[in-house]
Amino acid sequence: MSLRILIVGGDGIIGGALERKLAIMGHDVAVTTRHRERVTEGTVFLDLARPHVALPRAKCAVICAAMTRFSDCREMPELARQINVTAPVALCADLVSRGTRVILLSTSAVFDGRTPHVGASKPPSPRSMYGRLKAEAERRVLALGENASVLRLTKVLSRETGILAQWVGELKSGRNIQAFDDHRFCPITLDNALDTIAALIEGGGESGIYQVSGSADISFVEAARHLAARIGVPPQRVTAVNAEECGVPAEEITPFTSLDTSRLSALTGFVPPQPYAVIDRAFATSLAPACAR
Image (cartoon, rainbow, N blue to C red; front, top):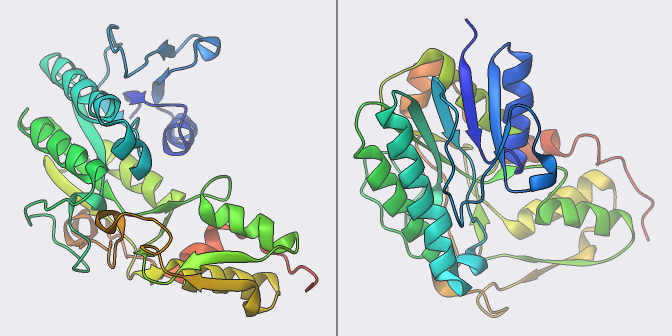
């Protein structure tokens, strides 16, 4: 059955890929963009820094847009609050009042990062500014009632962007890299995120909180050395460094980011993927061996 779906944040990796996936699935998709030159039929200009526009009616809306860099949220807290809390909450309230079901994308950063496989029912305990803002947005959106849901994601890997994509290019170009040994993450593929969102849209399910996560956390240096091995360059090209000694605020260093996915697994059969399998899949077309230098 074709549904009218609105994606808020079509410029991002997840939003753009979700638009393509839902269109292939036969849904009628409208998206927002913050670039006026990209406005076409089915695309609405929306800048969350000034969200005074009327959004089209839809059966379901997915809020993908956010300020996600920890440093940006820390250094520009007022703008971060507008983009991550004030604007999306107002949009969700308007959409729900018109009968639209909303799904707010959120993050494992709403927890303190000290415990693995955190359950969805555990109260948020954010340490970073980004985590605090997303936790507030979650609370206020969920308060809108049965047409509001939150989907928390761990780190989504993409071969186009992100530090791992940068490392692949540097290692293949013969450059050495540094990676944190005290900062960890729990990766999922972009397809994991997209399949989950599509399942929540089509399968319905009850409102509330869902979580999609990999099976385990790994350090950034472990991920970097895995990439080096797959590319075929010496592991000595990767140097382990300490995140806090490199200037990362202590509240932004995460020993654990993995989440419990039992509610999602019961709904869709989702099986949390292994971290190295996620890396291999995300960078499958980029990991052809290079000559060691």
